[in-house]
Image 1 (cartoon, helix red, strand yellow):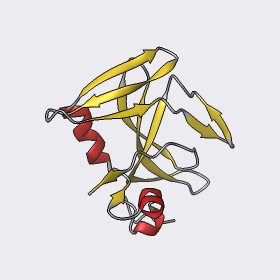
Image 2 (spheres, rainbow, N blue to C red):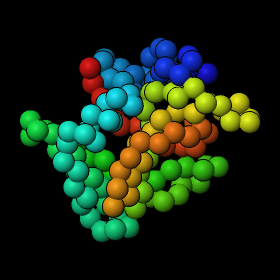
Image 3 (cartoon, rainbow, N blue to C red):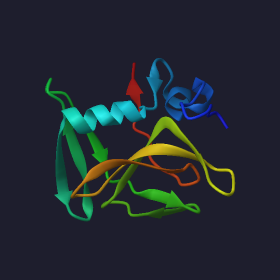
Length: 130
């Protein structure tokens, strides 16, 4: 399924950012998000139930992370007040149905953190460029 051990996606063919955008684009790693959490200023914009984070680095650059929610059984959930973004970093765990666990960034208007869960839930991808 594109994951080796507890490392990461092994080839660009399993990376939706590389496949769809090409030319140096990739999914962020767990370490990429850890760097954003540790080194950037996170500002919630909008209302509690409809917003996004503006994440600003020390160099003045910033990105927006909309609260895009998640998708369970082809149905969107929590859009507007909760965000979930995939990383390409697996954690090595597998559930009883054989689904691999992967790290993702999760947030709401009060907090943001990294979590791991199966890849059977649809989450957003925020591509980064090398």
